[in-house]
Image (cartoon, rainbow over all chains, first blue to last red; front, side, top):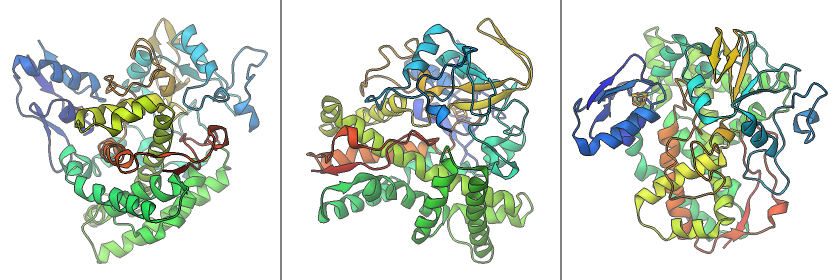
Length: 64
Length: 408
Ligand code: SF4
């Protein structure tokens, strides 16, 4: 799985961090999402899919 | 404006009034007429207080699609925008009623304190506030009104602390904020209340410009100094955060407690657990089930949009009825059952799209702490009156109870 974040779209809701804290983090200065791991292992795939589904800005794209 | 709550609600043209009335004796469920509309299809027309007939979007999938669509506008001044009440120019409360790029520019200035990490770091402080309020309740007389003794002061103390607003002034801004969210306030009353709050925040910003502290308003003054933000914009943001910070959470605490008292099995599960995951899922489920912002998310179409076989025209108003969206059986099986063990995390109680609630991490933290502390410390908590006696906020833009007399 490959994860891509569109930081221009991100509205810093932090939903991705709640869903998959090993894969997503937020910048301290403005809360914009950053990737900790763009190629997460299979056991995190469900959490990452959930993160993409709840992201209100549709800023997370997955290539499976 | 009694017509907005007219249970019959059908005009000769067959377009029902919105908002619709809830069923008597059924305080947690959305109006039956709204359920009927959802069963008819995802989009339907409704009639508002001003005679306009925007689209009502009743299903979860279409609500999310439209709220995330850049062709819809949240700007209250757009033609076709379905306003919940009369507005005038000064009713524009900061960035929630603006579109990008203005919205993004302003929103990004206040996102830093709401990152998951920063909010988590507040956990001990919020826990302390909760514990102290419960100590006071236990030391005082009973029965007690849970709204006044606990549900309202708790989030007010937290947001005051965060913003750097003296809590001593809380009577003043609670009064004004009540007026702003009251459905039947006149435009004059609403803009007077907004003006009061804006003036108060402007004063406070003035003090912090010369004498900054470690709080959000002080950080906004740094942006004012470098010309990134006008003092008026900063004051508007302060008003928004102050109102949003205490009305919503307060209603979730009181109404959530009432819902749990009416579902003793669910309450027992929550009271007797030390599993943080169950507390977290209970918060999400109560947010979904209660959906206290029951007036829908309002938008105007900027272009023609085709969705679910329907053509929405540029200039049409849209109301995403998220309360019934959270009860859409396609998204949540057996939606009218309160089940704190279900996975409800994808609910739309905080909205969806770029305007999704900025304060949601803080709201979640507060509710998790309250729901994991209150019932454990007051295990015999019960209503001190009949359900029929409880006054519900049918008339406000945030649903809840005015009073919740409880004893233990
Ligand atoms: S969920 Fe989406 S909008 Fe929220 S922080 Fe993550 S990427 Fe940004």
